[in-house]
Amino acid sequence: MAAIPTPLLLLTVLILAPALAAAQPRGFGGVAAPAPGYARYVVDAAETAAEDVYDYIVVGGGTAGCPLAATLAGPGGGRVLLLERGGAPAEFPPLATAGGFVRTLAMADPAPESDAPAQTFTSEDGVPNVRARVLGGGTSINAGFYSRAHPAWFRGHGEGTEAMNWDMRLVNASYEWVERELTFQPVVRGWQAAVRAGLLEANVTPWNGFTMDHVSGTKVGATTFDASGRRRSAADLLAFARPGRLRVATRAMVTRIIMNPIDPAARRGKLPQPAVAAVGVVYQDRLLQQHHALLRPGGEVILSAGALGSPQLLLLSGIGPASDLTSQGIPVSADVPDVGKHMFDNPRNSISIIPSVPIDHSLIQVVGIPSTNGTESYLEAASYIVPLAPVLRRTGPFYSPYSPLYVTVVTIMEKVPGPLSEGSLWLASSNPLESPAVRFNYLSRPEDLARCVTGMRRVAKVLESSTMDIFRSAAGSVSEGRRGSARRDFRIVGAALPVDWSTNDTALGDFCQQTVATLWHYHGGCVAGSVVDRDFRVFRVRSLRVVDGSTFRETPGTNPQATIMMMGRYMGMKMIEERHRRQVITSTDSSSNA
Image 1 (tube, rainbow, N blue to C red):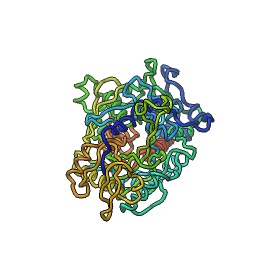
Image 2 (image 1 turned 60 degrees about the vertical axis):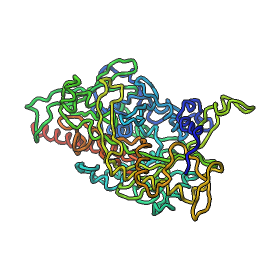
Image 3 (image 1 turned 135 degrees about the horizontal axis):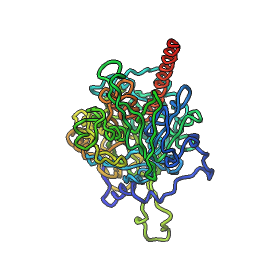
Image 4 (image 1 turned 30 degrees about the vertical axis):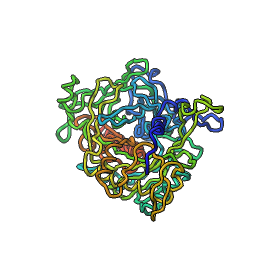
C-alpha cells in the first residue's frame, strides 16, 4: 500500500477545509421539515424568568440529559428545567442529514461565544477534538451508529471500578424505549458492503446480520437516520414529556451550582454525611443576564453536561480536590479528590483511501467485533463525498466557483476498547464558557498499544482481501499481490502502514502513536465509585447527581450513544420511583401524626 504523492495530500486538508462551508446540504424534495416534537418546550434562555422553582434541574440537554428530562417530566414526575448551552438542532440544517456530518465538523468553532453546534478543542496531547454545543448533544452531530453495550460492561466499568447495581430488566426496557423512537435498519451498499465482506474474509466471524446487540463477529448495527435520510436525535425524545411540566432553555450557560450548608442536626444516616446540599443553579443567557433556577423541597440538580462539562461545573462550584480549588481561589464546598481524574478517550487509527470507483456517502453501519468482552479493537468504516477547493481547476471552460469538484474518500478504522490509558481534566480558566484543559495520555499503557497494533493489522488484512481489489488505483505503483501476481496499489491519503506490517510490531506501534486520533468517545472525570455512588449521587453533596458518560471508566461497546441515552431513561425511571417512595413515607408519617 503506497501513500499518494505530496500534492494529493492536500485532499486531507480539504476534507476539513472551509470549502465545506460553501457546500449546500441536500434537501428533502423541497418539502419543509415539520416542526420537531420538542419545539413546544423550547424557549431562549433570555426569555426565562430571573428566578423560578423546579422539582428537577437538568444541566446539559445532550445524549443523557434529553431522555432524563423527558422521563422526569413524564408520568409520576415533576416540574423540570432542562438547560442547554447551545441552540436547537432545527436551527442548523446540515445536522439533519448524514451528508452534513463532515461539514458540521469542518465548521466547528473553538470560540466560547460562537453559536456553532460543534466546538473544537485540542487536548494537551495535541490531538484535535470536538464537543457538542446543541440540544441533543453528540446525537445531533455524530455518525448515527447505534449499538448496545457489551454484556460484561454492566458488571463493572473497567479496571478498578466498583460494580454498579444495574436492574437489567429496566436496562433493557430503557434501551427499547429509545429504540422505538430513534433507530432504523440501514441499507448496506457500496463501501459498507465491501468492508462487511472484507471483515469476514479477514476472519472477523461469524456473520451476525443486523442486530443492536453487542456480539462477536461482523454485524450491521442500527442507525439514527431514518429511511429518508433525516437524523433523529436525543432531542426528539423530549416529545414524551407531559405538557406543562417541561421547560427547555437553550443558549443557557450554567455558571455554578448554588450550594447551601446542611444543619448538622438534620444530618441522618451513615457517616460521613454531606455537609452541603445543591439548592439550584445560576445560568447566563446570550445577553449575559443572570438567572437563578431553584429547587423545591426534595428536588435535585442533575448534571448531564458530558465528560468535559460535568466535571468542569463541579470544579467551578467548589466540588473537587480541595487543594486544587484553594490554589485557584475557588471556595471549597466539598472535598471530592477524584473530580476531573480518570479521563479516557478511545484512540482511533485509520487508513483513508481515494477509491478508483465511485462510492456513495456512508457513515458507520458495519462493525467488526473480534471479541465479545471488549478486549480487542473494534473495526468500523465510513465513506465521504467532499467538495474540493476550486484551486484545483482555476482554468478551463468548465470552471465555476459555484460548482465545486467532489471527491470520495473511504476510511477503515480501528478503535481501542476501554481504554486503560487515562489522564485528567483541570480548569484552564474560571470562565465556564471556555473548555477545560484535558490530557488523555493516549496509548500510554502497553496493553492499549498492543491492541492498536493488533487492530491495525486486522485493518491491513481487510484491505488485502480480494473484495478490496476493485478500489485499487489504475494509476501509481504496482505491488506483488497474492500468489506473486502483480496488482495495483491503493491511493492512500496521509500515512501508509509500514511495508512489514504483518511482522514488525515495533513499526506498527510507531504508526499507532504517530497517527492517533479520536473517535469522540471520551468519558470519565466523574467516575462511579470515585465521584458518584451507585445511584450516581455526588459524594459529600446532597441533592446532586451526575448522569452521563463522565461516570464511565470504560466505553460501553463500539459506540456509547445507545447506552448513554438508555442511562438517561433508566435513571429518570429510578428517580421517579424514589420520588414515589418518599411521597408514600411522607403520607404515612402525616397520617400517623394526625
